[in-house]
Length: 391
Image (cartoon, rainbow, N blue to C red; front, top):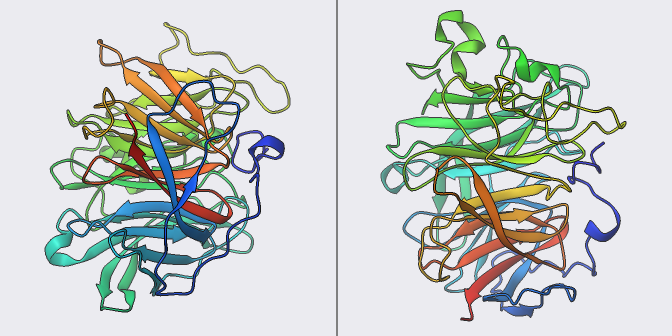
């Protein structure tokens, strides 16, 4: 099942070359040119340079004000890379994680007031009762000296509920509202399906919280109390992208089953249909009804069949790549592609514009202050890639 949704896909989607060795902590990393896959027919408007390899990298985020990149590693590690100097530091103070399947270290997000508070948010898979696991989000501070960095004061502020004996669909992506007041977390349905429609738990949901992890006022199901008070939207499957566009609208990008990966405009109290509706079918061949105009569920802006198996996406805001402004740029696992998508004039649907196939699966993406793009590859020896414009 994990292979079918692209998270652990075999064959053509596996790494195509021997992973590069990782440099020693604190080492300076030089750039190395990378070529796209030979079967690309669309000329790429970028040049690719690799800056070292990492052990199963999972997320990358840009540290505000410095240009440094914070990278998490699935087995329970983190690094800080400075593109200006090439220096790479190992970050200590990372929590113990429940590693295996899709579980392990997850996302990194810098608090809206990071410049003064040094506060960061991390997500990871945590061991529960017996064989059960759950995603959690913690909050702490990042402290760095000239040669070392550490996370201090880390405490858990949110947990998935209920815990499940499954190693899949944690999702645990993190973002903040544009005004900096609210924390949004993507909570996968843990490969269980039905909990996505159950408002008594937070699996298969997007939750909206205060920055301390408590439910935010004005959430649509607050009158139910308990975990229900966290919920912003529901009927989600396995969300690997959660971002606001330039107009302040929240969107998610999530894995479908066998087909049906989807980009959604996320709205308050909306139900996105999983597992009652999907534009893909189940792994055993059972047909899941497609979204239809009269089904009562919120529809994806665009869906993919065959899947792209997204790693993450950005709304591109720079000008370095001509014609890309406000487009969705998605880095993908299952087919090792970078896909460019435009939101249509109606603001609610989208169209794929072009894609490029990379030599390995792509796990995450971030835009730098100068409009260039950083990607990380998936798996052992996953490289940090820098995309700069060529036209």
